[in-house]
Length: 220
Image (cartoon, rainbow, N blue to C red; front, side, top):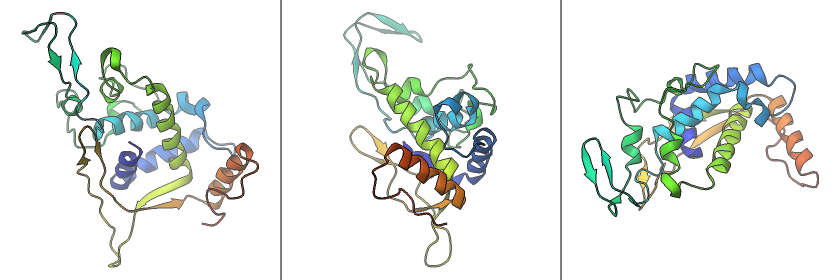
């Protein structure tokens, strides 16, 4: 899903700049973003939700079996029936998500608050029913802090090929038995400034004071 986020930023530089402006308005005291900033960064959560929806990494969920008779949209489904949820189609329902191929965080937020009247992508991204992913909260938090850190420190740009032209990534995902994932692609992570790298390295050193290497050289 982090690779999907990077793809989205490569092809939507305007969204990347908008997200960085929101972060810069909140993180103003020479530090890295942290979870205390999350309530003030609804647009980053909008990006996270749209990342889950835009390219579903588990398009066909694990099979479930009904324990009771159910009726759904006029269909009677008896107990014991195996049901295979189609998460891909949930994310592509144009009555809920118009122009589903577009990456649009504004589906979920106005930048100040998250909307509560729209389908929550986490409801199909992490599975269904009693077998929903037990690590979903950890995954969600990890994705959020990774996204906000990348956006704070770096500009994510298309790599330039030998011909001097940007290398366009392939947006069609590859598939395995149960998951979809981006095909290999190249890109550039450009530090936004020397100060951003200094803040990143200082934070790293405060967490791992005995580390012998820095995550990013102090050069731009």
